[in-house]
Length: 560
Ligand code: GLN
Image (cartoon, rainbow, N blue to C red; front, side, top):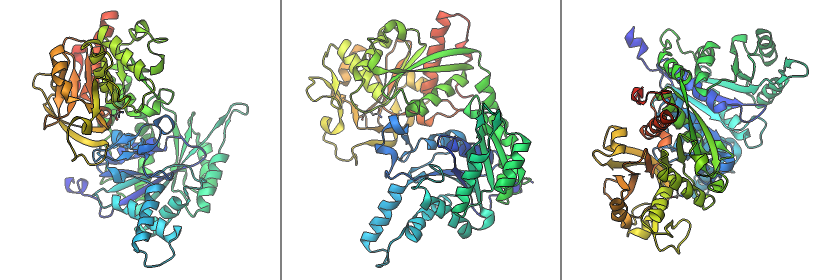
């Protein structure tokens, strides 16, 4: 039956995931888990997110408030949920995988100005809804069998109304069998009465129905499993079959979620709703289950300190945290991350305290706050042989630190923070060279780099040609390259034209590596990123020194 199993579906199918009751219920993870389950059934899956806020894209949003800006290969600055999508379905998404009300309206208004609407009154229905449907339909032209569309926000929000209306219309346009509505709600446990409550779910479904959508499946988030009698109640009150009430309990790891949801029958009922033949698309969850085994079979614990600016909101560095965990899975180590406020280094968080970590990361960031604390962190890591990975701003920091304390350029700085430094070791490319071919001011998306033969980074990547995603304005100032190299900081990876320094490393140090890119965006649970693997291996060696035999770094398997 191989020919049937390999066959693509005749029509693209669409799953719409909405949320009710409360935000932060894990809609993105539920949608991503479904994506993984459908992919495990041999279906081609793509995913996208519709965000009802008015920003044109999340690029200008404060990560301390909104969480990380996830960058795609084509330079899209997108919502962090796209990171979950990529990590779970292992497909590279693009700019068009994230749409906001702001981007919809800018397009509609631009069309109106051009006269495209031929003098008609431009209205939310049909013009805005048509634009939203067009964005969804575009996803369906990319060759996927199933497009999973997550609607940001919760039903009942003012901004969400045009999106709900659009997806309601979409079923009529695409055909009943080609659309499935999944609604995620919260089933809270009330301790005083010792009961789980369905009322918020009922209200949320009522709200959705008032907009013309009857959900096909209700996914109930709760801290305890939902009993059959409760499922029966939700089934009756919300008018879905009992098997379409899915219990989604809190899990120890986010990577457990696809397995749990599969056991709840989630993917089966989605396929039934979409008329996808389960015999033609049997599930093979074995590869994912082996990821899950690695997540739980950890024999040691490594402590990683992340020194940054937005540490009170760890979602600001979501992909960095996941990349650390993935690398840990690779060597059977649990990684505990401590988020450290850069401004507290070195006064409150000193060398002794930092020395308790097995590895340190200074992640990306913008703006001056905390810079001196990060520089102090890099200095402590370099001088005390603590494994250090510098990501984007974190690399710029280690370059500034090295310039100040090894090259003796005591006021070395980035021109992002001052123009009065006599040693601008990090600066804008336009300040360094006469370059006009860079387009916008920000270097965004995938850029290739050539790694020096025999360098530490080339060893880790196992190749000398790599591509990583970028999101920054400032660069290593090539005028200082020889000075750095003479003092031992190797510029081990460069842009193919040799103009841009992409990687630095310090031979002889336990691990002192920096990259101008954001490698965290390409790490996957079953394919940890080489640079994070390098950090974690070095961290394991350091931990081994402290508590011998807790781990054997020679067993590290970066490829899984
Ligand atoms: N602020 C720095 C720059 O613009 C670093 C950016 C980042 O870490 N993403 O170059």
